[in-house]
Length: 514
Image 1: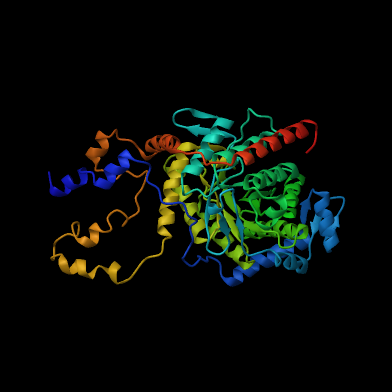
Image 2: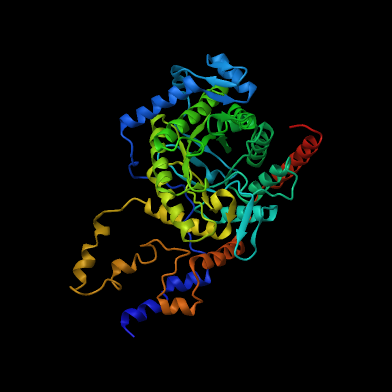
């Protein structure tokens, strides 16, 4: 056997320590993107899309099913058709309202050390949100339940590459639909100290999230207005329709100073015309409409420019994600967000039905697009499967590995006299190696990114270890992570206040209150 082969088969001290210790992770921190954003549209093309969006808002309008929202627009000078509920806004009004939205804001959980900054070059990766089903290789595919919800929440807390919990990682369908948000908010707060997304289907669920986060932080709701603690996604029913419950959630959040991400769900060929240019113009019009509404509710209310534009399979009509078209849309949407000076939300998603190579390359394609487009909030960044219909434990681990790769890539390159290693080059003869030099020995523990999922053994060693694929190793890792998980301490008085609030709200909702 060659010396090189022997070296590869001998585990280093660091590798032996990892086998006996915890899962290797990067430390928790909010990453920043030090590289210039990629622009795939010219300035003239961005302005062309902007003007087309203003024309859509002025001539075609948006249906707004909320009477309160329509009243706000009417009072500001928009043209409201009472019969059709369509609101048309002149360009000058749109631009004046957008100008009052802030270019950045913070989001603070019950752990102030995990405060997130949104805007500029700051990034945050979020847990998958919304799927009705759950899958893992041990228990198979099933409807979501509270136990699964708690499992995902624990893993989000444990893995440092996840910065924020999404809006119901899975629906606990065994619980009453009108109160299950209280259970999921409670799990978010007790099992993690990360920020989380509120459910904005109507005002009541949104207000409950704000109240419960304020209790967990030991502050008042009024204090939360100046120092936000929860956020949400406001989905637009493309084409050009805001339903009443989403509008109510938007109004409740913005009125209390909590940020919302206005996100049109625009699939080319289905919810928009088939071209990317038309999809971007429609997406932009819908996003600007929602952003304008936030400013009518509360001038200066924090808001994300949200993008979720992709295409359908024209043979089946099924949604597709991580496609070249989706990649272009994520980057171009970042240009539009910067055009308006707003924090940007996008998503690195996929359409695969399994945690396989397709799920990985589609997610990786979209992840790079979100990064190149300078997205501040990467929503659905860990655990998304089946086009959003399933939350996968194996996919969560695979995604965390990809997110850690990206975080390490975003670390600036260090170039100084010591890093250049001239003394090491002088000490090693031509044709020699650097394994034993002081320069290497001083750095070998931290010189390179250390993966938690990748297997870099040679074939023989991999075969002896069971020939496990990355997906199979992911199963082992989420089980290990649950063993390593430690519940963050919540002050007893705040826990009691949360319990009391939940009891009051269950009674109120049961008696017919919103």
